[in-house]
Image 1: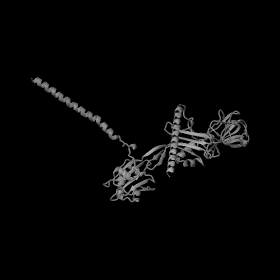
Image 2: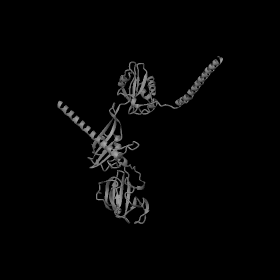
Image 3: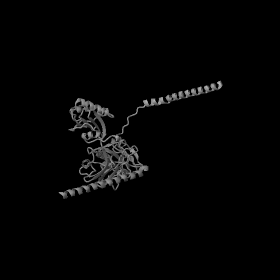
Image 4: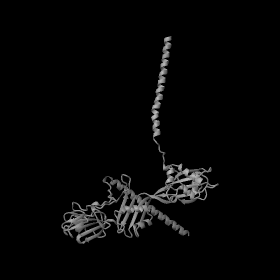
Length: 459
């Protein structure tokens, strides 16, 4: 009997020991696994998430904002602007807010996300809509501190100030503008409503292909498609996206360029065939030629003394085709003294190229005629002061010869062969968009004419 009892006691004792060991291991395991997790939580700072899409929409007046947030009613809404070297505190002092209100307003703005940064980066000329507090009415201000966001500060019925950031309602709108040039492209485009920053982008884009001072004539026309962002509260354009499409018709010669983003998402422009709008001036406008004389001082082979050689000489067989170094307009084609038979092409208002000692000209080359880069304009010869068949080639910048070898102009890459199919589909979409915009413009004109006719009948 005693043996049985002892065995039972021993069995119970062993069970208790096992349970205690299990609890001990579990407790220590919990500590072992949880402690590093807690340490990691504390050592990794978590940024407060911000999603501007979740911001509430702003309102056009303080009164409407007060109704939105349920603040203390306001009266006599006024407007001021932030002056140079002013802080918000000094501006509020200038427009008759008392020191107590100013301190509470400043603190309320500091309490919003990035509030301190907002206060230190308020732009000069920023609009301040405000209503001064009184015993019966509340104080409030609205700061249009960016093009798309407002900070609104208001007083509640207990005279406490609160602040919140609001998103100004905007919309994107595709715009097609067509116009005829009367005096120059700049003035005519502005008159038609092209925003100045978009116009400057347009001029920069076309500048590789067009000499704006000499090539544009009265009656030439242009087309441009771009996207504008409109502030719905003020009904003004606050920004524009890069140009989608631009066209310039120069006396029947039409230049079209389409926006096609590169792999980095940056806008690049190409014509219908995928050729880049960016042009470079060719350093060697002749195939299979040997550079026989460089730019700089040399002993002249005929005159016999050292003379500055302001171009490059390429030795080549008689009749070798000479190519246009870039798109442009023929400024001179004929005999030019010691240069012999000579062609000069104007590429932009800044750059020209010249080709001398030719044996003849391409039949399509005439003064005032547009030529394309890489097309044959003439043939190697030995006319003028020359010792043998060669091409004398010059690059002029602001009518002064410069070294063609050292010229640095941006050269755009054409659309690659693997992307050309996608590019053609892309420009087809743009042209369809253009047709839709043209129909929309036409429908608006019809609607306007109908309204005018109805009004005239009523009168």
